[in-house]
Image (cartoon, rainbow, N blue to C red; front, top):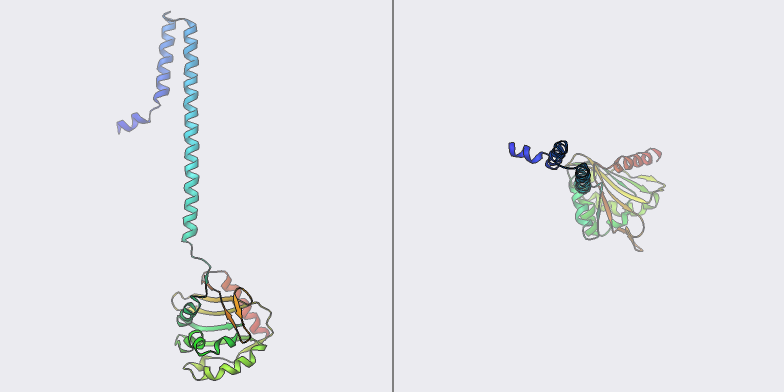
Length: 241
């Protein structure tokens, strides 16, 4: 404890004071001349000035280090925050979509989807059947553009042959003005509403003469502010239909 106190003392200042007092006493005793005292005074002032300069440089270095630490902490904080949306590429779309349907609960809404995408049995089994067979999903609502009437009639027999077909409501037909496609439902794991979002057109949607298939989708997380906006869009279309 005493050692720490000794280390914290301003020894250069103490040495300067001792030297100054000694010089004054010696000058009073006429042991040194006034010019020598003046020289010592100037030297002490220079010593204190150099000490202050060292302190300023040390403070500048410390401030620089603190600023770097703050930047690092902000980067870590940003890295710890969960993203609002996760981009899903072609290699994972089917897996993520199937998991989304399997883990959903409550009402599921399909907005502005391309029904021709579900005509191939493999795609139907991966991207629609899991929702039909998921006992936690109570209702399946489709809000579709009017040009999807024919594709709807084409996949309806396959839907009716599945367990859970009773959950599928009559589609809400709209004059769509949106460039997005949505599947919205609550997550059984988190209890929050989540969504799969895709955009019509390249590079997000691959188009052929028969159908449009998502190439990239976004998994919108339950804490995202986008969810409330999506729900508002769906509500407005249902009310105006």
